[in-house]
Amino acid sequence: MDVIATAGHVDHGKSALVRALTGMEPDRWAEERRRGLTIDLGFAWTTLPSGRRLAVVDVPGHERFVGNMLAGVGSVPAALVVVAADDGWSAQTAEHVAVLDTLGVRHGVLAVTKADLADPTPVLMDAGERLAATSLGQVAGVAVSSRSGTGLPELRAALDRMLAGLPAPDPAAPVRLWIDRAFTIRGAGTVVTGTLAAGSVAANDRLELGGREVTVRGVQSLGEPVERAAATARVALNLRGVAVEELSRGNALLTPGSFRRTEVLDVTLAGALGGRLPAEAVVHIGSATVGARLRPLDGAMVRLRLAAPLPLRIGDRLLLRDPGTRRVLGADVRDVDPPELRRRGAARRRAAELAVQPAGIAGAAAELARRRIVRADDFAAMGWPVPDDVVRAGPWLIAPGLVGELAERVPDVVARYRKLRPLEPGPPAEVVRRALDLPDADLVAAVVQAPLVLREGRVLGSDAELPPAVQRAVDGVRARLAAEPFAAPEAGDLVAAGLGVRELAAAVRSGQLLRIADGVYLAPDVALEARARLALLDQPFTLSQARRAWGTSRRVAVPLAEWLDARGITARLPDNTRRLR
Image (cartoon, rainbow, N blue to C red; front, side):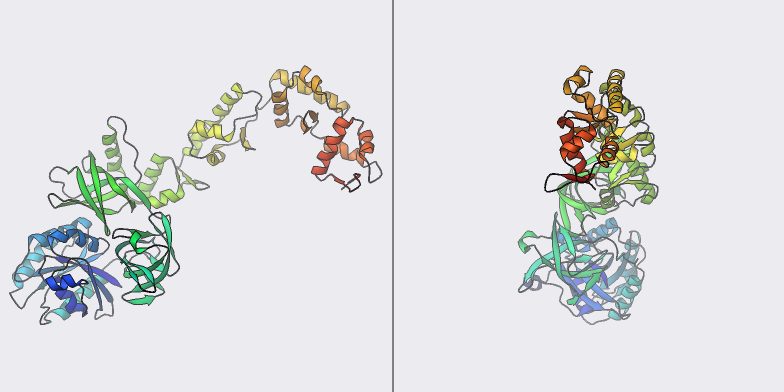
C-alpha cells in the first residue's frame, strides 16, 4: 500500500477530488458535509490501474485548521497538491506547500481542479514553477474535473508513476505510529488509527504507549482485517490494556525501547532563517503538537525545551510554527540527550560541536567519543548506529581507546588505596569505579589489566604483601603450624604477636592463613594433613578419636571437624560418628 496526503486551499476541491478518485466520502463529520468544509482529517482509498493500493489522507484547507492539516501530512511520504483553475495559487496553497517543503517531502503530483470552470493551463504552468522551487521539485501536473471526470484517468496514471519512484520503507525498522484518531467499537474496545511509516505490526504485538505496554488485539488496513501490516500503510489497531479516554491525537505507539522520550533536544534549523527566532513555537512531528521554548546556541543551532516529552530520534525532521506570524521552520534533530549548558560560552561551544558532527556511522563514533560510555540500548534508542570498533562491556558501549586510557590509571588507584589501607590487598571495585568516574561497577572488569586482577570484588596487584611487622608475626605463626599443624594459637598469643582482627583478616585474604572458626587459624593446606591422619583410623570414627589423631584440643577439633563436614571431606552419621567420603 502507498499513502499520500492532499494539500491546498479551502474550496479548491480536495475532498471532491478524493471522492471522484476513490468513490468514498472522506469527510467523516455531518458538520463537514453540511458546511462543505473539511474540518478534520478524512481517509479514503482506491486501487490504481497498476493494481497498487492507494490510501489518501484528506486534510483541511482552511487556515483555522492548519494544525489538523499538519497532523495529516506528518507521517506521509508524498502529496497530492490541489489548486483550483478558477482561483489559482493562493496564500493557503503557499502555506501548505511551505509545510511540505519544510518537512522535506520530495514526491508529489499537481492536480488543477475545476478544469470545467476555467482554463487550467495558466494555473498548471504557474503552480508547476512554484513547486519546482521546493523540495517537491518537478512534478507531473494534471488538469481534472471532479464533476465530469475529465482528467481522472490521467491523474491515476500520474499517481502510479510517482508512487513507483518512492523509496521502499524498511519493514524491519522500529514502529512509531502517531495516532490521529482514537475511538471505541462495540464488542472490540479501543481502536486507534494512523499512518505506519516504517516497520510492521501484527496481532499480539506488544507496543509502548506513554511509558506503558499495550497489546495489539487485531489489525485492520483499508477496512479489512489483516494478520500483519507493513509500512507504508494506513492501519487501525484494536488495543488491549488502554481506555480510549487515555488517548489523544499525537500519542505514539512504539516498539519498546526503540525511541527516547525527551523534553530537551538540540536541533539544526533548515533553510533560510530570515528574521529573528521566536522565543516560543509549536513543534509538530507526525500527528503530535507540543509547545516549545527556543534557546539559540549559535547560527542555525538551537536548543528546544518541550512542554511535554516526545519519542524522538537523531535525524527526525520537526516543523516549528510561530502561531503569531504563521511562519514555519524545519528543524533536524541532532541530539535527544544533550549536555547541560552551565558555563559561560557553553552554548557557542555546543553549536561548534554540532556544526562539525557528521551523520551516520561517523557521527555515531563522534558522539560515542563525546559520551565516552553509554548503555547500548540508550544509544540505539537515540537513533545512532553502533560503530564496529566499539568496546562492549555487558550492556555498555565504551568509546574506542578509552579502555586503554582508563586501564593506565588503575595501578595508581590501587597503589594509593593500599598506602592508606596497607592491611587490605586492594580496593573494592566500587572504589575504583568512583575514582575513574565509571557509571557502573560492572565496568571495572573491562579496565583491569594484567598484572592486576579483579578477584572477589577487589582489584588486586602483584605487590599485595602485608606490612613488614604483620608479615613477621604471620611468619611466626606459620612456622609453629609447620611443626604442629593443628596447634592453633590462642587468642592471647595472637594479640601478643600483634595480630588483631584486621591483621588476621589481611593474612587470610593473602592466602597465608586459613580461618576455620572465630579465633581458630591454621595453615592453608591443613585439609590435606587432617584427611591423611583420619585415613589411618578405623571408619567410622568419633570426634575424640579424630582429636587424638590430630593431636589438638577440643577448641580446635570441634570447628575443624565441622569445617571438614561442610566441605564434603567427611560425612557425619546419625550416631554422631564420622567417616571419610
